[in-house]
Image (cartoon, rainbow, N blue to C red; front, side):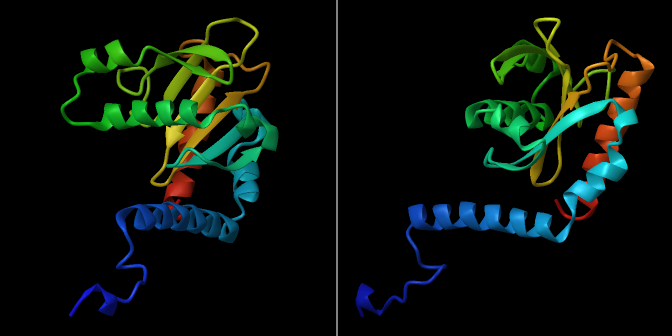
Length: 189
């Protein structure tokens, strides 16, 4: 028989409809997962003031902010900028990408109107899962970024944090970032 016998449900939608449904379903699932977990409580335990982290934001894989503290921190980032940062991690984890090629293409990025020089995610400085973003001007704070299975986490250091190369405070920030990302990953985010 003809196409009139086809019942339109989630499995028979057009490619565009299925894609938009998939994206919105993924976003709703991330929001649902996050509502089950008290992210703010988790952040209070794993990102205390002594960690050197002043603010943080969480973005889903579609570059949409899903949580931030304070909320205004996430609004500083445009979706294209978040996508560019996600692309750095995607490139870095591709098996065919050499360290030289990664360094050549991922040297800097503009986030929230500030230019940053990237350190990582490859190299001896820190593990693959963290990028350090050094601002081009001294009055801006250093940023750190780390992915989980479903999120991109962006952290801003507290104003008095010494994030210079291999400082004890920078090591503390790395530890806090890794712990928070790991905790979110363990609960499926």
